Length: 248
Image (cartoon, rainbow, N blue to C red; front, side, top):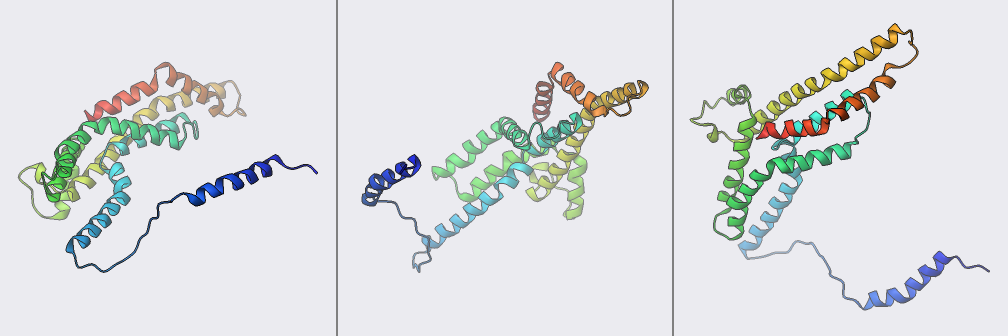
């Protein structure tokens, strides 16, 4: 009777590994509710709840308060204009957008780390001061990219009057104004990317129609030509350069 090698290896592992694991101490993690008379325990619990809440909101913060929105929308328009379907894939585009976002936001991240995180870890400032120091560089970055018209829209909708300076505006006004400004800018860039690709489609369709090749889909000819054109002009270099310089 032949014995399967996989079952033989599995049996040897069970014989030799399980006794070792049985003698090894394994860390135990428990979660529960207990009564406490120390107010610090309650404060620590609330800090943990706040920490996990911030973690759940972290994707929204990355998407809506950084340059990620503009970059990923431009990438989507580029892929659609070139008619390459799912090439590059969504995972690749999101990965590129995240790393370019990190590159653009590096000065802001360094300032937040130097003025808020590290002083708070060393207990040199309070939690409220740390939040203010985190908010300030983010607000300065967003205000540089936000149009006056968009800021005025949300100031009027709030109905609280004009502040003395832009820095006095709260995040509840700056963030939505920044988002719609980024959407407008991203759509403008996407329109400019569409124009040369649309021109190639029109030329190819006209040539095929004049040659009587009505059964040949123009997309089969225009897509390789658009890819060739994009590669010849070093498109990725130009797009990334333009996007990054737009935030400097």
